[in-house]
Length: 462
Image (spheres, rainbow, N blue to C red):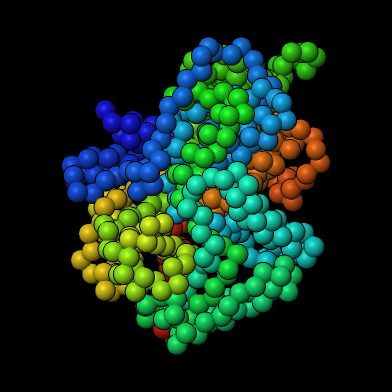
């Protein structure tokens, strides 16, 4: 069995209510030799397995999960001289860190106005300020570590489909400028052709502090740095349970039971986010996993891509379930993603293709090379979290913007272990669940339909 199919089978085990949709994806795509179910990004940086020379009986820090979050924590911990072990259920590069669009947004789903009403102006601004700092820190990290991951400081253009949405976007952009000095450019419909060749939008907002990366190359680079700093990695290793040992113990605080054996640890960081299984019930009950999926066109050629996207920016839409899209790093393809709305993978893929051609009618009949899916995770209040429960540190709940938040909050978790007082405003924000929720999002179709209805009002011309 191919590695990608093994990974997909593991993903099916996570959420029983979605099992049929994922199994169908594997079966159908396996029979379509012209469309790969693997992420486009894997061609340049495929998932990898790692084994340790011998199973350790203890470590200073055990990190569960080998994505941006896990390596974001592991690197500063190892550089501080701690013995760090990463335990990965599948392969390094099998999860969301290599399945996303590679857009460095660091978005917050909750508006500045709503956060102000809930937390007050000062703390609300601090949430957004940390997002700005996290984006800048990611760019600085990539440059300082010389990671070859196709970093592009190209800006992101958000398209508005209705004049009232456009006006709301303008007001929000002005507040970001006033409070955080985030510069934006406002484009009316007549100005958009300099950046995108479409009639779908009535206007758009360009932010030049957002860019793009090759997500799998970034993770690969982070993995290499961690290995060079003597981080130990064990893949195909399922964590079965984590328990606190005797508080008076002088050797360790945690007992981590895995499919390969026991390991004791001074600290445990959970970096599984939307891929959290039943071995971590506390976290699983507090996250709602959502399927996000993408398509990549076959090569269109640089001239065609540039004619459709003259700005060669990152792009998204001012909708609850809008699409995000971008040129491939080599400028020869277009990649587009969105939330899954149908359990039928053929219909799901057709929805993405329809989204692509609604933006670019010129691509009617376009051939698709890849169609893949992954999970993103939402807390019930839709704010990222840096939580502690029974001593375990949980950076989680990135709401589909983990390209920035995952590494950043993983790094913040490391600072908590090191006790170096680099606080995060997300630390200590209540991380609640709801009654009778066990982690399998049976209610998700209802929520997605509600958002779809909202979007219909945002796409109807006034």
